Image (cartoon, rainbow, N blue to C red; front, side, top):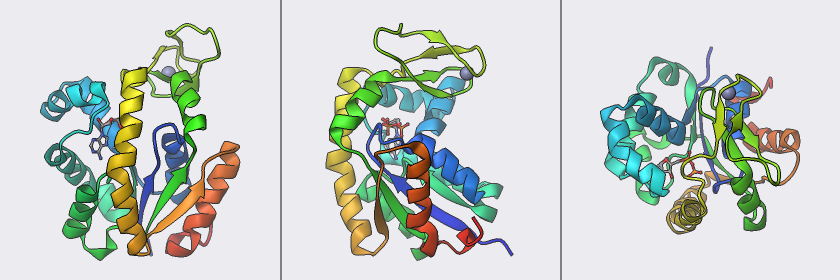
Amino acid sequence: MLHRTRLIVLGRQGAGKGTQCARLAARLSVPHVSTGDLFRAEAADGTEIGRRAAAYLDAGALVPDDLVLDLVAGRLGGPDARALGYLLDGFPRTLAQGQALFEVLGSGAADIAVELHVPTSVVLPRLAARRVCQDCGANSRAGPGDPDVTKCDQCGGTVTRRTDDTDEAIHRRLATYDRESRPLLDWLDDRDLLVRVDGVGDPDVVHQRLLDAVRNRIPAIDDV
Ligand code: ADP
Ligand code: ZN
């Protein structure tokens, strides 16, 4: 019998959340639901939601809750999420979003939430060096003096900075995380739903730490 797994992963920008979530979701065979990726895809496709969200994305500001909730409801209503559960990456990120999630889906909305923790001194250089392929989405890291636009190792596509990885938008996003996500983290902690994981180190080691942190909360994890 299939167990539905419901995980929330939180972490400030540059914590390695996207990479770790993709690996964890694959390992647990659960859909990876990244609101940032979903918004970028909607914006690239020029959909109604994408058009309304684009200005917020570029400025590094939070998209208004009604749009976010529409997007998430649509995704979590899909057949894969209904059958298998979900790994939420980038949602909820405010207390209001967290409360809305639990109001709509009940107390089983999440088995556990994990905060991937990385200090500011580590995330700032990571974000400045982060590059992403416009075609396949692969993340890479620019070296000192590398040009802003390069060719993708994986697919030959165009690799650039994310439009919200400008210095100004990075600072705004980090400040927003501290302001908006702290109350959510405290709220989850009060409900005994939060574990913190050290995000500094080799990606394989961090992956193992994440698995260990969620293991005893997730029935389906015994065999991984
Ligand atoms: P980051 O965490 O580095 O900001 P994401 O890819 O998670 O990157 O999100 C990119 C942008 O998408 C955010 O700056 C915001 O504009 C929008 N976004 C994503 N998730 C949410 C959310 N839960 N609430 C509001 N806006 C969101
Ligand atoms: Zn590529």
